[in-house]
Amino acid sequence: MRTSSLLWPALLAQNAIAITVDTTSADSLKSAASTVAHGLMSFYNGNDTGMTPGLLPQPYFWWEAGGMFMTMIDYWSRTGDSSYNDLITQALLFQASDNRDYMPVNQTKDEGNDDQGFWAMAAMLAAETNFQNPPPDQPQWLALAQAVFNEMATRWDTSSCGGGLRWQIFQFNNGFTYKNSIANGCFFNLGARLARYTSNDTYAQWAERIWDWEAATGLIDTSYNVFDGASVTDNCTGTTRLQWTYNSGIFLHGAANMFNYTKGSQTWQERTAGLLKNANIFFTNSIMEEQACETVGTCDTDQLSFKAYFTAWLAQTTALAPFTFTTIAPLLAASAKAAAAACSGGNQGTTCGFKWTTSSYDGTTGVGQQMSALGAINSALIQIPQAKAVVPVTNSTGGTSIGNAAAGITAPGIGMSQAMDRSAPIETKDKVAAGFLTFAVVGGVLGGSVFMALES
Image (cartoon, rainbow, N blue to C red; front, top):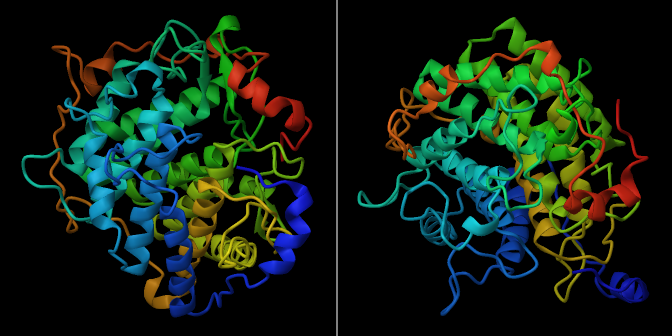
């Protein structure tokens, strides 16, 4: 919801309290994060009588609710505030579906690979942080992530573009002809994290394959730009070259997991370092900015939340690939301070806006704005020595979540190994791209952002 610009001066004058943080103080950061988290959860009514657990009200799509609960797990893991944990558990389990795979009936009609992926990454984070486990008769966090990964493996599509996941799962949905970095990024990120957590190298082999496909199609170029996607209609011979924080972040975090899993391989160190270096396009004076839409005011409801995931993945990267800490920590500190200063709206003077580079409230409010500010402030806790390294657990370092390598396999003989075996190798001749985006991206983004920084 966007507040009329005619009201901005009055709002700014009335609500100039703002949240201030001392990024060298754990107490200051945790207090600020608590205030912002409370504001974020005020948008959620899924636990009210007659409402559906796990869903946000209109205009927020299902995937963003998954992203919100992922953000709240990260909040708990860094601050120790368990106030929302039962609510988070209820939501993650209710949306898991009867097949325990994040394909709930109420979303099947328009669910995409990336939508399912965000809920799976929330479950994966729950496993990695030893979030409270569900009752034994309920789906378990690790098994839920494995179920989604296995289902994605069966959707790997070699009929065009040499492989890759399509944006959408079902043919009747707009976007089915588009293969994008976020859908494949979810698959890659899950594969890398499952490899590290379980020590099952098949997951790592998939992660390698997905990365190779992204590189072969040009969706990740030699300078580590991560582009939006490509269309199967011309076999992905061109790319849509918009860049988003969450695309960069999801591959950076996955690469850091692979660096950690391979015990510091040079290949994955170079890839992690390359992605991090290229991520500087998302910072102005060390403050995070959604460069493809923020400066021209065209960010849509989804895009307003991207910085939340990017900040969290940057913070988690420092624990998995410690050589990144000296680069990432100052960026998160500066962004946290600016984000907090932008939280001066509403009746209490603590509602968060979206633009941080002005260090003042921009007159907007919503789930994305609040979640992004929470991500920034919470992630800045890596500055504090005692809170610095929240290293994700594995099944050999204290992880307690119960897994199921066969979860999500609904057709006999079709699992992650079998799907890999039947996939064709990626060849140079299969490099492809599209000259257009699907209606959702064209209508909401291109008009205002196609001229923005497309390459670093």
